[in-house]
Each structure stands twice: as structure tokens, then as C-alpha cells.
Length: 115
Image (cartoon, rainbow, N blue to C red; front, side, top):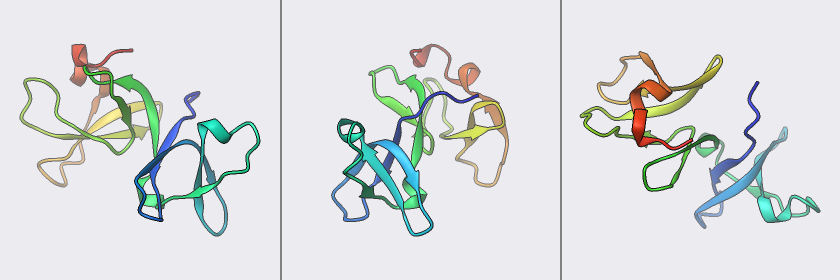
């Protein structure tokens, strides 16, 4: 079961990224910023295709890795997309296109990811 519940999405108003909790309605997709979750009064509309869940992992610089991020593992020449598949986070080849293969997240990143 996935217990991580932090999301990120690009604001529809063009003012950058917003981080917090994900809400989907019949009409739009929103992120409620973490600092407003207590009263649930601030809903920021985001572009649905940009929403990604926090993986619980960070890169070697302490930057959080989200679903949909493109990463380049150390010593590798191939970029990967971070995706949720079945029971865990996986890396999908970004290049070459249409490869469709998945590799275990921790195996590929190894020592480059904390957590």
C-alpha cells in the first residue's frame, strides 16, 4: 500500500509548481498546499498531466524525486522516467523512445538515492 501522500503539480495560472495534497473533482485537479491543509480553504488548480506523487526518495543533493521526473543515474547514459507500477516505483527508459521496459527503482539508482 502506498502511504506517501505528497504531490506536486504545475499551476494552471502559470505561477510555477505547487506542493501539497492532491484533489480531483469532476471539473478540475487541485493541489492543496501543505500549509493550508488544516483548514482546507486554499485549492490551487493544476495542469493534470503535471501532477506527480513524491516517491519518498531524494537525489544525492537532497532534492525530492517525484513521479514523472526524468533522472540520469550516475555512470549511466540513459535517462529514465519515474513511474508507479503495480507495487513500487520503477524507472522507465526515456531514451530510446518506446522501449517500454521497466527496471527496479532501487537497483538502478543504487547509492545515488537517499532513503
